[in-house]
Amino acid sequence: MQCWCRFFTYLLLVVVGLLLCIGLVMIYSTTFDSRGNFFFYRQFVWIGCGVVAAVVLSLIKLEWLARYSHYFLLAVALALSYLFVCMLISKLISVEAALKMPFMAGEIKGGYRWLRLAGRVMVQPSEFAKPALLLFLASYYGTRDEETIGKFVKGFLIPGVLCGYVLAMILLGKDLSTTVIAGMMVFGIMFLAGVRIRYLLPLALIAVALGTTMIVSSPMRMRRITSYMAPSSGGKDKGDRYQLDHSEMALGGGGLKGRGFTKSLMKNNYLPESHTDFIVAVLGEELGFLGVLLVLSLYALFLMCVVGISRGCHDKVGLLICLGVGILIPFQAVINIGVVSGWLPTTGLTAPFLSYGGSSMVSTLMCMGLVFNVSMRNMNAIALDNQRMSVVPTTGYKEI
Image 1 (tube, rainbow, N blue to C red):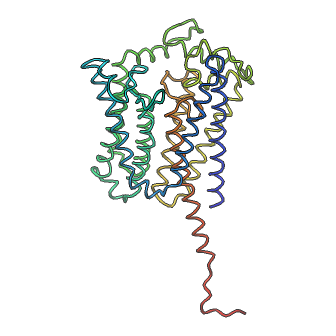
Image 2 (cartoon, rainbow, N blue to C red):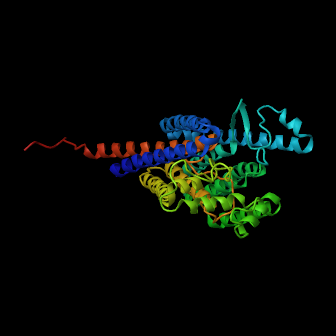
């Protein structure tokens, strides 16, 4: 068992490293013509910050992380609440009054989602809600017995209200896609932890109804749906279907082997989000179907490794952390690739490990730090068990 746990851990390191390298190379390719090496170096810095955070989280005792996980969730909830208050000030008083609030970055892409720490350094609290919710739920359910988890108040209502508040703050910040991703992870962890279906089913129906209401009540989201359902204009439409059309054209233009590195025709003038949401489209155009297949294979290997590590867990906290990450990152990758290929409407979700973004990269690598923490804990526990089994009592025996 220790051999398999070590194998999955090292393989996961290789998979994540390859995805990060591919992401860096594609960010360089998509931005060097217009911005030089700016985004490349910035992404390198974000990866460095994320790796440091991952190493720190992997070395801290899991019991300590579980004991204080609610403080992490509280910090994220306070940051999201602060952004919501700033949004209310902008609506009820004035935008100028909201911008005078400390750390306020203003309205970006139609929502108040960012806090400005210093200069150009901004953080998106909703991204850090993912590892915060993951660690909190894994700690909450991992330290309680099945009888307690099966109860309505302690097993469902208390964690549901706490997580629901965080998700509501993300949603009110006009970040529906992150709400859906984080909500799926929360639902999956609660289900795998043993919360009763009769409690979760009404919650799922309410979430679907609420999400539908948010889409219908937002003209921007409705335009995304209608543009997705409309037939392709072949790149002639300058409206809401513009990026979808050119993303499909980029993937189709790449063929099997692609046009060649840095030779994309769509990245500069036709795909405004080529280094973030639509980086896989540029990858497909430059490296072809084989490049996209490589990325899909790496995401599949990622899921296999996380599930493999979870099978060696000796405690429920580690098991739920691994399964939560196994839901969160592959699900986000599937949605991003679905959008890029034209199967889904635009969502604004990045491709994990590939797309440019500081908060998303650091939060994703923080989740990886938790997984590696669990993996090292598993290997230490297995090694200790093997050591105990190898000790042969000699009292009462004579050598023959």
